[in-house]
Length: 604
Image (cartoon, rainbow, N blue to C red):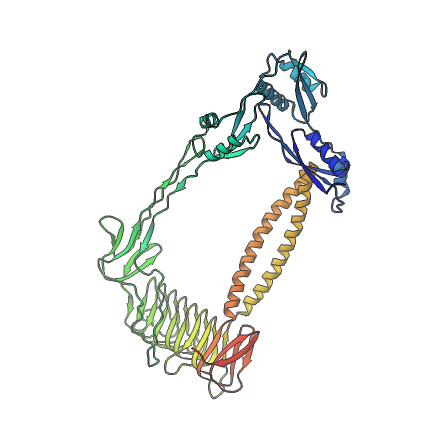
């Protein structure tokens, strides 16, 4: 008995199948036949041989009776023919024909022409194909078999970007030298020839080996120009803590200050790029890089050479909606109240007075307030700096996409993407996507709720009166719920992909053996489309899971650092763990490890 499968190569498909069946010692009814490579003739010469895989049939319960019946009713029609030089003439013997008669006629005619058979009859060739299958037909008078020299076949594919060479052996004629082969090749191929590959094929006489001998060059598009800015387009402000524990609000460097004549931006020119070529020598045009222009806003101009943007005044440079502006800071020297109304400015704002209850101040840039914020709404896409603080009366709210720095925060609501920093935070609701710090002489957090994604730092948390104070660092419960839901969705998608893959594999196996009905082919196409959609869904969910896992990992490492004391009445929440402080804890670092909240000595 043979193995489970065998791969055979040759020019006669019928003989190959017979050979494989004999070696496996099985009948055709018990075999799966798969054509791995179609044979190909050019000018009567086999440039590609058939490659066939024959394997034993396996019992497959998935295949239904309808498919088995269809397989049993199918016949494989194979084709071979021969040309023989006999005593009374040249004969054509068409053994089998499963191709279109016109295609077979052209193939036989190519063979006859290469063999240089004289005085052949086209009508008799047609007759042999259509009427006399397996019966030799005389197609030409008696003649000697011609000596045919070696030759090469050039095939240009892939939109003229690749060229293949096949060396055809001589038939009683002369071999082909490298120099002569090169002359033939260079008549068609003008670019990208791999001379070493060519020489190797010719010298080693690698007949019928179809080899890539030339590749074109794709064009390289030029790179677009760009703008180089000489100022910080995404400036971040974090104040410094002084030696005495206070915070320096005088040197925050809030503004991108420029002077008249300063260069604000430079236009970097585009690159040219490079043309490409096909193997036939056709030029493939490339795209030149596009020039980039700076859009000018207020108080700026181009330099004499047109490549730079220069400030016309002293002031603050900003990039807004793709335009470069230089603006003075919008200053309000009085309180924000009925005399001013609500303030909204597409830049930075400096208020030298207070912001009264019920009013709104909104800015794209930073907001700096010298006085006290009462029950007002302050919103900034930059930083909020309160030189004194906010007495919110349970109405005041600060909302910032940058940092919030205040002398004190009392009875207020804060939402901040960056750092929240104050000398004292009292009876307020604080949420930060970064860190909350109570610095300065008091360094106090007492009452209310304080949430931070990374850390909470203070000198003192809570009070000797056991004031209820909640400190949270770590994962948001909503984030965990979303994570669990995504995991379940991911599992369902993977199961569906597995089912679809199995169905596609089965149907492709049948298709490879020409055993697929029309209905099954339509089903295969449907499964392939479904798989594409499922693969995209799987990638999307997997990416979301990875992002949430990273956030959970970062948040679970959140810490609470207290240099003085944590009083009873303080509730600590880190990730999914909770601890109620029942006794004073001094100079400590509170963190989460192995699902438990732990307390260690204070460490900066």
